[in-house]
Length: 187
Ligand SMILES: [Zn+2]
View (tube, rainbow, N blue to C red):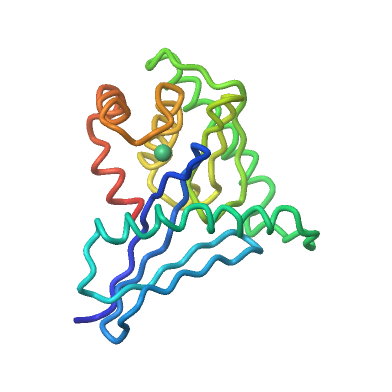
């Protein structure tokens, strides 16, 4: 069986979620987790026989450790990494994100306090449930537009509940019935 990679979203205790690149490898027997503090990229490799539930439980159990690693990275003085995206492209993308957010806010009747785009690789978006600020990853520039819509509605839905629980998905699907299609593209 060949190696297989996919992205896993994990909710952290602070309400943020992380994207973890999971790789199933036939030649290994242990879980290997690494966090790259520079840009917060999280990778996990597991044996092929490990199921998704086990991966989820493992990552949740490691959430505090992951968070700590990520906090270390933000508190450490690092040279500013040049954006991989052209400035103009980023500003156009931000305008587009703002348009789409305004649209979805009117549809869902949920309101963020601010929206920004950021060059982050560990997640597609985040929502601070206290300040209602939403951050969208620049990675979405390279994804089909449905993915951006999905992430916006996903993050707005966190204003209803911070967890990925039944209420969350019921609300999300009310406004985004084709969420599974988008989730597939984001994997
Ligand atoms: Zn989420």
